[in-house]
Image (cartoon, rainbow, N blue to C red; front, side, top):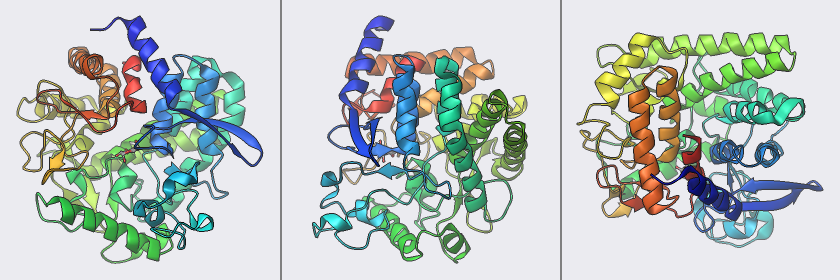
Length: 428
Ligand code: GLC
């Protein structure tokens, strides 16, 4: 295991190397790109993780990371999942165009005016958890005054816009909104048969995005249209509940009793809904719910374990998840846990490749999901399991640096190098 000092020095150097500055409406902003070569923009949940890592070095810098995100908040509360600060990089990449409002200039015609400034998607709402960390690290009243109103507005928007059936669970309208782009958790909702090929997977994802774009990115239109991709996602809703819980505490600290009461009540309501609808007592796990009839997507992925991040999760359910899923050697407990897909599923790919092409989240071990699990397990008193995941994660980082993901069987690194959120290792 590397010395803590060395790991800290490396993490800080990585965050600094990925740090960027840009101006919006006359104001200078600082943010961190996920990876200089392959992800040269600002991503929503990456920035939340980056802020949590920055807290270890520079609380003001951590707060700025969130300020840069909130600078793009729309009047209705929405915050985009990607901000294309430097639009020179958006040339010749069709997904920039597809996920945005822009109709001209892309995918292949380099007309600067038509290039998108942001995507129209969301990502898992880790924002309030990140703000809570910044506040607890000494961000003080200033960060509450600056950032809490926007963060609260974002949560109110999410619930108003994305809970079409008013059951307390929000829906995502594209796989990328979960942050786990190609995870097999979304194959069924994409209309794919089990274990699809790489090209079909891509085509199905592009089609969903195109249909959403044709519906003007209106969640109301998308969620009510037959055949839409509409998933009540376990990871996204777990983040929502954890976020609302953090929000209730922060609002209380800011003396805003009305928002505190709203967030607390909403967290309870959403947790009840998650337990009632998405937990399958016979299987001892949680499933994503697809479409208006809430069809469970019964494939074992990391998504199913994410409710462990919730302090209020009943003990019996946490035990089921840990003993019946997480620590089973044939499921989620290989040499380098925790794989993004259970080992026994036909979709599991140790090297994150389908037909020889990289398809992320189809098996690899990632630092951010390990981060959720380590802290979640500790909250529930599973310290041995938390320590094992922590040790495996630190070993991977020490050997290979801050890579995007790792092979859960042999630890081989994959994806981007110098990957920002892998610095979360210092927060384990
Ligand atoms: C990939 C990941 C997504 C992340 C993005 C930038 O698309 O799936 O979760 O936000 O890269 O790092």
